[in-house]
Length: 82
Image (tube, rainbow, N blue to C red; front, side, top):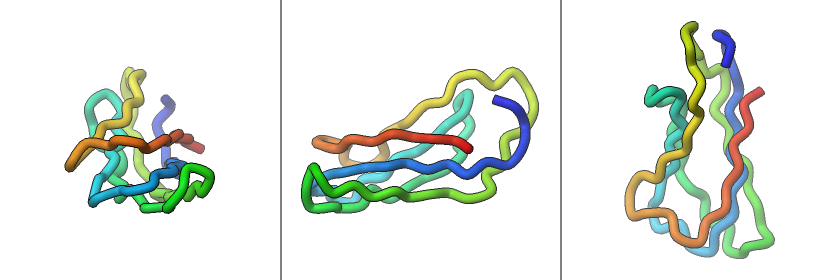
């Protein structure tokens, strides 16, 4: 990933979130931390966005999603960096 500022959006659906969070990392450096929204149904999706996230130069290559707090059962998500 090239250095610069990015918006990171995560689109999720879940029946019950129970206070879970989702962390977005690039080469083990946290870029964003999202509270998982309770959308109430598998067909109801919500997009949460972290704006102007700074990515520094280097050989960044591994973008990962990490579950924080209580696991993330029955949640679907997709992350997009633009």
